[in-house]
Amino acid sequence: MSVLSNRCKSTASSDEPAAEVLDGVVEPSSTLGFDGWTRIAGAGLAGTGLLHFAAPKLFVPLTRTAFPEQTDRFVTVNGTLETLVGTALLAKRTRTFGFIGLLVYLLYLGTNAKKTRDEKAAEAAQPNVVPSTPRVVPSTQPASGS
Image (tube, rainbow, N blue to C red):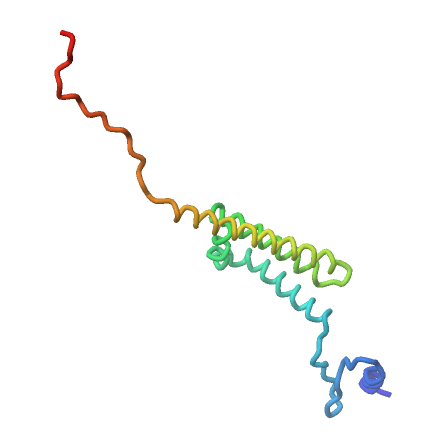
């Protein structure tokens, strides 16, 4: 028996179809399942994190919305966090830590973006009035007592 026929037999006997045989060629199944999609998402997130270091200028406008001060620093911080979280999502062993890290990372980004938006809204709501100083008007009446 060939390797292909052994694989087709083991594939056909499993509960979930992992592959389909078309004209003697094993084709991957169209359903990846949770594990497969999580690995794809982890690889994408890790790749995006590494891209923060390869082309940081791409991320400056987006990062500025949450971190208007020290934006370049936070491009690096976000790239590091995305690389770590994405890498953790790749392996089953570290996936729980990856999901916890992803949740914390999203809260971190969301909180900072909201804080920045609220600060900008508060600045816009304040009128641009220069505080006035009391004017001293000299008296036109002669001083009494002399």
